[in-house]
Amino acid sequence: MNAERQVSAIADKVYRVLIIGAGFSGIGMAVRLQQRGERDFVVYEKEAGIGGTWWVNQYPGCACDIPSHLYSFSFEPKPDWSRRFSPQAEIRDYLAQCAHKYDLLAHIHCNTAVASLRWLEQRALWEVTDTTGRVVFAQVVVAGTGALSSPDYPAIPGFERFRGRIFHSQQWDHDYDLTGKRIGVIGTGASAIQFIPEIQPIAAQLAVFQRTPPWIIPKPDRGISQLEQGVLRRFPRLQRLVRGILYATHEARALGFVFNPRLMTLHKLLALNLLRRQVKDQALRSKLTPSYAIGCKRILISNNYYPAMTQPNVALITSAIREVSEDAVITADNQKHEVDALILGTGFKASTPFPRGMIFGRTGQDIFDAWSAGPEAYKGTTVAGFPNLFLLMGPNTGLGHNSIVYMIESQIAYILGALDTLQSRGASSVDIQPQVQERFNLLLRQRMQGAVWTVGNCKSWYRHAQTGRNVVIWPGFSWMFRRETRRFDAEAYRLTGSTTDADQQLRLDHSPARPARPARVPEEEPQQ
Picture 1 (cartoon, rainbow, N blue to C red):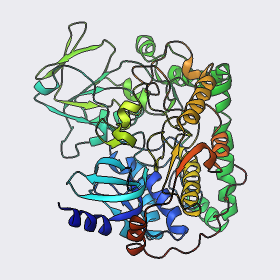
Picture 2: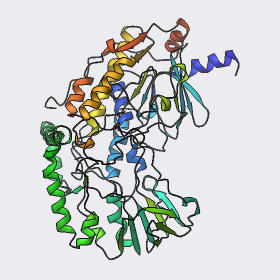
Picture 3: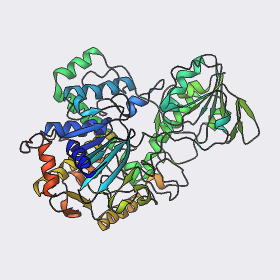
Picture 4: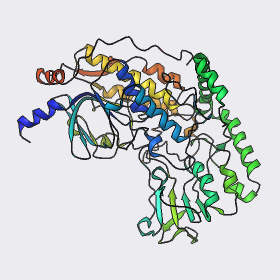
């Protein structure tokens, strides 16, 4: 491409904001931009539809483990959730409805996956290349890819030899009929405990390969009647009150997770009582009893997992997997477990959200190398050396006790403050100062000490594989994070000067006029 054509390409395809992902993070960010009068933005979504993790995870029994009225946007309440804990399809449809209601469809490009992001220092722009090789440019990139977007495949020898069907739970093969098959399930995490009860009745045999048993408490689920839905629709303040009560009760659990793990005793008693009631066989119950501190891994909720595990066509295997052969899983005790299909319920790469070769910041540094000791960011949102890049659900913003949507909305408000700063100060970029990021993460590590995630020798996907640091969970109350992100603290950042006249003119020529920034949407949940 010659210089003239390159300038033309830049002129044609420069966005103020490019958002990656159309899940809760991406849709929430796009809605808030739209509400403020911003029109110069685009959403890249690698899948064929809207919903993020709720689009791709379509396995049988897939549902949320946070109550419906809490697992939704504060600015878009839904009075007619069908159940206390929403099934996957209903959450997916909710996000699609939000995109339609707020007129986002023209901004969303589905089947468009980002291959690389490269910061162009001279232009103060991100060069964004998709997997087809098409290039666009953006002043700001908001990565809403989430922590649960990249499946984690176990390093087990022999997968390539297996002649049967094999798939990860996130990529469920709906064309393969499991009826009457010998099925092997590897993993017993949050996804597996939902789909195992669904496939157990139709399987000839079900072999469940368990490395570590999860802590499971009862799931207080039920349908929500039309009468209840009607009342909530008629009285919106009542729905906000319900949401506030749910938030407060879940938030109280942080006392045990973060400040005094001994307070987790109640959850432990609930879990042990459920196990004792639903599993009468003492040997099986022993295999299903965790030996690590409750809360160190995600506490799961289910009423039907243990009953499924007691059925005569189910075998729980706790011996480590040695290899996979053409038609079987072979364990360390030399037992051969013949299977027709293998389903991987092995979770996601939450502690390594971006692969090598995807994001290059100042000086061409790969973010993968910047995170050699584990992902870290300032307030889970910005990373030193990567200007104008904002992460939603970034390092240490996950929760073990409450709704991640609350954290996402907190981050969105912070990012909007950064956009205001760029515009009001005529700056071309903001980059968190390295020493500020370092101090922030040192404080996080100090606050981790004594939390339930550091008790004993518990291994968890919250921890980075090499360093053992918890790089996923926020060590505190979620309202503390909202307090941290309520104001964009420009003094913590390095702001570079105004953009060059040429680039500024390109943006003005190819962007619709933006009105003066309207007043910030008022907080809809003062009780939180």
